[in-house]
Image (tube, rainbow, N blue to C red; front, side, top):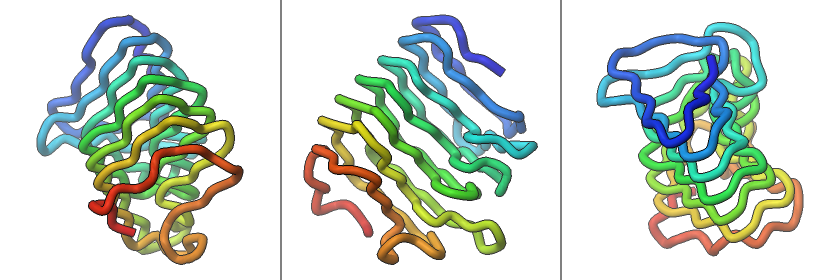
Length: 167
């Protein structure tokens, strides 16, 4: 499924499943309303793929062990990842790669109890800069790098974590 209309807010009012959701336009918002969860149905790279600019993602998303990452933020700028509850990915709850000038706040990543399990709650890949992370909670990320659920592939220049982060 593709979210391809710019300047549009997409929302999910009841739980649903999909193979993959791709944001293919700038200025798109994706929100799951209270009580609704978007879940993966088959093996894939990420449940939500967001390579676009000026986007907003909020809500509850479940990779159901099918997705390598629940959300992939790659090559975008000026995005907002807000009030997220992510669970059930094979590699990372949130993959951040080539993302700049974005805000990640009020995010909770829960690892799987079975196999495969999340080995990085948030995976910071390459070419990220000028991002702000605030109020991040990572738990049960079994096998996590350094036991804190974060993996950094390269040198990054993100803002210092806030005292409200939970690691």
